[in-house]
Length: 415
Image 1 (cartoon, helix red, strand yellow):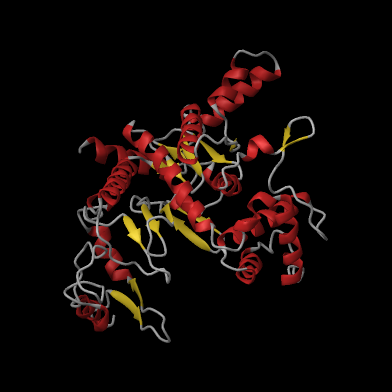
Image 2: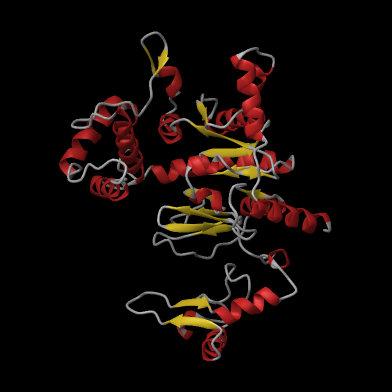
């Protein structure tokens, strides 16, 4: 709402920007004031650095209800930028395109086109909104757009795929997702960033971490003082491990842990002092001495770049095969029956990007084709288990879901 934010018909002070794909001019300020004057939008002016708040009024909503177009007639600009470069302050900045950025852009654009054509929804929801923590997550047609975001003015830092409403909900909620009315399976890399940290030191963690009778050692299975619950211990080690990889100093790592810890689930108020976390980080370094030099150096941003390359490899394969796939940083959701293909591609991508290192993966709670076939020809309890899971895969769809699915099919069958 400030004219100073606009230059040369864009919303960036440095002139024309790749990020202003709608070519918005400073005259939008006059439009907003007129809409407020005639009662079509609500408005609250910003203060002390906060942005102004603008929302639609009931009369404006009624206009849209009566309009002869719907959500499928409104789309993103073809020029909307999907390769985002940010500086150290997380502000989007300009850059010169290269063959590499053009190639990355093509992958993301083709992926977005596939997502737009795919029906991604949860069959038990009458309205396409899902509650998560203290907010409501919209699951509409325009909540599937994905961008790839790089950090610190470098295409070698960050680069993760961000966007898509499925990234904002938990694993249990994602397990209910249907893609084109088909059940799904989620697979994720086990302890991806610790394993990538070892790979950065040219060490294959899973080859060196065997203990006892060749059992594989969980990198987060580390002793923790004053916490008896095994799940809570692992959660704390994992959180501190990852924050220490990402932070540039120990203080920031400890502050991140204290701020991100879920006290509603694990109420350890007052326990996580800097001294307590420093001792735990010392233990983590002892258990992971080959990568101890990476902690609290900001190395995590480079590991994110590596995992983004792995994700790009997998997205490109599935997009070229016209198979919708959802990404949640180090995990992937695919339609039921395609989990073997996904697992193979995850292994191939990891080996290709890291230099032939091994991976471990884990599946979510959903039924897989392999498990289903194990019970298909069984007898007694096995047979009943098979039949019950077939029914689960074909579970009822609520009225709102069916209407959304039929509407989606009608629109795209006409294109």
